Length: 313
Image (cartoon, rainbow, N blue to C red; front, side, top):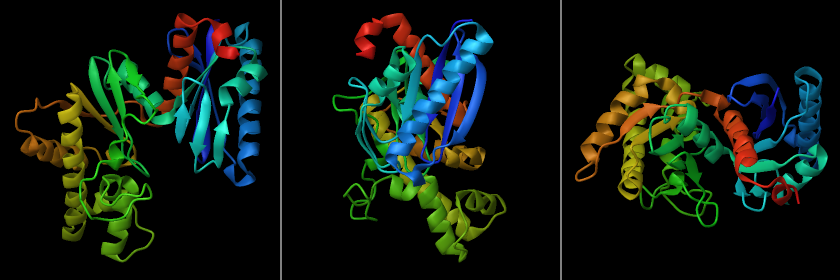
């Protein structure tokens, strides 16, 4: 049975699958990233994990995988197949595509985790009927994936879609990027959690706790939540003014609040648009599997469009 290896490398865990030609996972596996052991150990574990997946496919499906797709965080040079920088993993200029291709003996595609997740949401998830979409996961930070006709735009230097660093509150909270008032300092899941922990006096409180308090009618929680919604709406309207997407797909941990987030967010965006065409604003459909499924799509795309010799060298 023809299949490819799909691997999504996160800061704490790795999700993997063997994906058939119809895009359906045949086999799934997970393991810890083990970043506490250092960047070289993480790379070694990725290579070993991929090799184990290849062996599993050969044993159970009659042949080894035809290609592999890998999604990683940080700054990624997709054209060169290099993980340029990943703070959480301690990586700098890791030639991950070449290392995997050498280990596996098949063509390998390397992608940015959010763009790869956006690719999956755009093709087989919440944006599958949209020719233009913007995928925005709200997690520890905020990133974005710009979808155009079934592909995701990386930009000239690999930074396209970094909506989390749109300044929505000039002079506001400092951001690790060096600016002040960035969107992700107000509307990410971590920012909401921090704000709610300070408001309620519980240092262990997080964004999910804030959402529960909003639903129960807590005035403090509603104030924290509304501040995040307003900041997010400001950032999204800036993005849709520039990109004119047909669909806005919101994912990540904060989106798990459901209509507690989406009802006020849709209203806040609607109030802010003037001449712009209001896009559909929908929750992501694939959850934490998006990156892995997108990695599988990258691998199949590679087989359909590229000469393997150009990818493995």
